[in-house]
Length: 610
Image 1 (tube, rainbow, N blue to C red):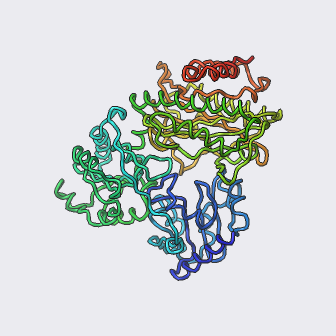
Image 2: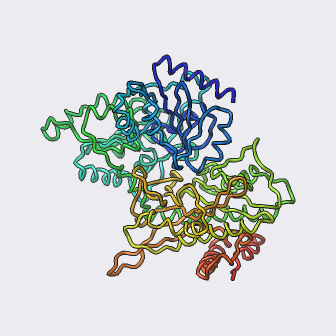
Image 3: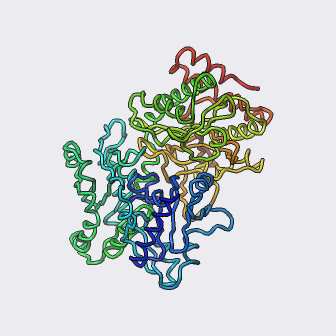
């Protein structure tokens, strides 16, 4: 921890020199991406906390780290001895960062942050909250840059153009849909900063964020013009020709601020309408960074709405769905092969959390069309599985023994889809309590995947189906039940999700036909065990009658649920039937993709239970 303390001291010296009293460091890049490249891991560099979500606030007197329930155990361990206070988000009595700053900051003090890594919605919220104390904002300073001597470079990789036959829609068609929304909102321009939205819109993919096939980019559109800002390393001659074909003007990524400063907003308005008023620009304040927002608010009237691309890409078209169904069967077969290998070899050879993860990763890498993992594989044994996003490394891992359970959460990026699946695998003797918890998780997962509901429901209406078996036992898991999943894109995609907690800041969307979500209840007992069973499901239309349009889910994931941890004493007849129906489908769909020995084993582990 000496290096962490030294970095904090140096940062405080910089703050003093810049007359900054409090400095905020979120976990973000310039596009509010969930996962960020090493260049943007400033919070990790300064605090030592490696989780994918967390914000650091530093003053001369103290420092605090805010993170969510997925990371409480991990953060406590990684922050030990650093002097940084852990603030457990959403726990009773724990202030938000905004509340903390409101209370701690004094009249006329200065709050500093890099405005490129703070989204404008949050920046505006801080402005409002700190207004009464006349707090000044210093948002053009990346104070860590001069301290981080060996800071990695900003990633820059060539862009890949997807074949139109696996996209289902052309760029021309997608741009027309976006401009239709612009017209409905009476907007003459639209800025898009969200990377997966831009990749989907232009039918391209990149490699600038680990596990997310996206390129660092910005988009700016009018009703007749289309500008795409990319790093020069991303642009090939093929991409130039592609852009020209679709009327896309390619610009340098680093010129976005100058472009927005110099764009002729008034002239543009007058030459189209003869009206000298400011033009209206459609933008999503949760994804456009604060620095760009401050430029735009001076130049134009801003219309704050969700990017139309977000909902458009969330509803997978028939071509995308067909590709996803095929890739999920192949991916499920790879995971099934992994479980067979693990069960067969545990206790006979040395296997660790890390080597098990590498074995599964290699099975995926051998598959046709493999691009990357969709996130680093989580492989947690026994008590390590209680840390939801635990990641074993080559240097730090546990050896697996023929006892307890291993939780493996993994996924792949393929030309044809993005996958995500979790199974908790029994390696030997487990307690009755663990069996009770495992069975409740399986029942909850199957409850949700078998839901029938009226159109108009959001995930918040359905979350109870997954949690009820656990809530009935006084148990909860401190995360959502489900997230959207992209198409050869981010493994976490909005706006659709499944969670119970209401929040003004959280996105919520009606579940539309073609939306894909995860279904992943769990139990996490600190110091003992962790259980998660995750399938991926797709929203479908069902019967329509006088009561409305009914909806249901189809399952994409077909991987056996470990019967060694199922106790039917904790199940109702309908639960047993659902498990048996699911396992029958697993065998029918996956067995043709397995070797003879694996098929014989699969028949046994998917046998009907009673």
